[in-house]
Structures are given as structure tokens and as C-alpha cells.
Image (cartoon, rainbow, N blue to C red; front, side):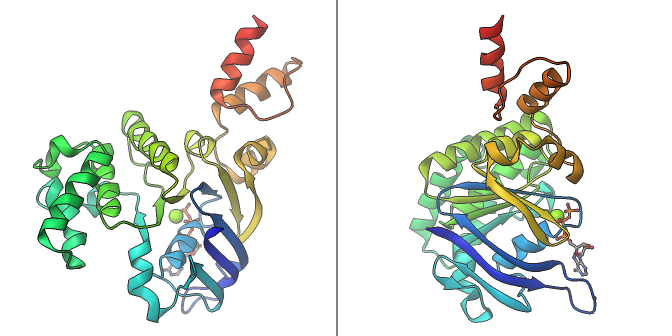
Length: 274
Ligand SMILES: Nc1ncnc2c1ncn2[C@@H]1O[C@H](COP(=O)(O)OP(=O)(O)OP(=O)(O)O)[C@@H](O)[C@H]1O
Ligand SMILES: [Mg+2]
């Protein structure tokens, strides 16, 4: 079953004449992690905002579970979808880590006792419980993004969207967030949609969707889509490490396996060769 479905979605911003999403039909499988890649301006963030109901399409339907994303259903849609944006500083609203997570719960009038439990549990889930009383100035970018994710987990959503949420982080911060996402995926409780230019992030997802000028030009399992190095070059995203190495060896005439290899698989293959 798909957690999110788009059917023939067309969208353009008011007072513009360009279609940003052009007849997009797409499903996001329940419990899986899908990354969306594509050139700058291809419509990725617009797609995320449509799923969350922040924008409404001129044509077509979007459903979250079996709930149509419409003005009327907005409160219920927001209960099910959480978005993490690019800039960790713009998202921090509380005076402390715990306050920040509390903010969304207060908005939803969650009772005090339950609120405390949910704050503790969600901070523990992102490994930030020990910093519950810390102020934002004390945190790294990666820690702030994990608090942003905790704020979303506390609201018990079904779908988590990350719009380039790791792009402003240093390598260590990025790794922390990616590890957290990997862990969340194993619970199969959440459907994860991440928009990224980061090869490492796309390589560890389950599925990849490629957007180009408002159309889906490719989609499928990671191993299949990322095999197409030429496509990745065309859309200007990085090539995952395992794939780049495989390609470099092939270019030098080494007989490499035809299928996509993760970095780890590539290392194992090389070790066997040596
Ligand atoms: N509020 C707006 N009003 C008018 N046009 C907009 C608005 N927001 C975005 N656009 C345009 O819509 C197109 C798609 O934008 P969008 O932000 O969805 O792209 P994107 O794929 O997320 O790009 P990036 O990789 O740079 O984040 C762009 O050409 C952009 O200029
Ligand atoms: Mg964007």
C-alpha cells in the first residue's frame, strides 16, 4: 500500500505561466524510504509542500493514506506529515531542546502528562535526551536537525519529509542524521521522503524518484536507478561512492559486475579480487 499518492497533479504558482509539476502521478510505498533527486528548480520542494498541503494543486489529487489533501482536511493531514527543512536555525523555536519539542505538542493541546512522556521518548529516539535542557546556541547543526526530527516524532506522524535537511550540516552531523533515518526505517512505522543532492543519502534509501522540469523521468529501486551514471551526470547530482569506483574501474578496462554496488559491496568485491 502507498502512504502517499499523487494522481495527475498539475501545479503552477499564482501569477506565473510555468507549470512546476506537470501531470505527476506517483506513489510512496508505506514504510519505505524514497529519495527525490533532480536539478535545482525541478520542482522537488514544491512536491513536498503539496504533500503537506502547504500548496494546493490546480489539477489532480493527492492522498495521504486514504485522506485527500484538501483545505478541509488540513489539520488531519498535518497530523500525519512532518517536514524538516534545510536550515536548522530557522526551525528552532524553543528556548531549550525540550521546549522546542514541546512547541508542536502545545499547539495541538496534548495533555501535560502525555506531553512529558512524548518529549522524553522522542528525544531518546534521536539520542538527544541528555541535552533536553540545552539551549540552541550549545548545539551543532546536526544536533539541531535531530531535535527538529524529535519535534516531528513527538507528533506521531506517518510520513516524514526531509527537504535537503542534511545539506547545511558538516560530514559528522550529516552522518548522525542519516544514521537516525536508517534506524527509523527499520521500525517500518514511518514512510520517509528525502529530497537531496547528497550521493550518500540517495544510496541508502530504498527507492529513487528523478524529477526533471516538473516531470518524473525515472523511478525505481535505488540499485536500478543509481546504476545509470549518465543520468546522474545529466541531472548534476553526485555519483555514490561505490558506483563511482565501479565506473572508474570499468573505464580502465577492468571487468566489473554489471549491477549496482553499494560502497560496502564494492569493498567486499575488491577484497575478493586481491
Ligand atoms: N513562491 C514561488 N512563486 C513563484 N515561483 C516559485 C515559488 N517557489 C518556487 N518557484 C519556482 O518553482 C520552480 C521549482 O521550485 P522548487 O523550489 O520546487 O525547486 P527544487 O527542485 O526544490 O529546487 P532546489 O534544488 O533549488 O531546491 C523554480 O523555478 C522556482 O523558481
Ligand atoms: Mg528545493
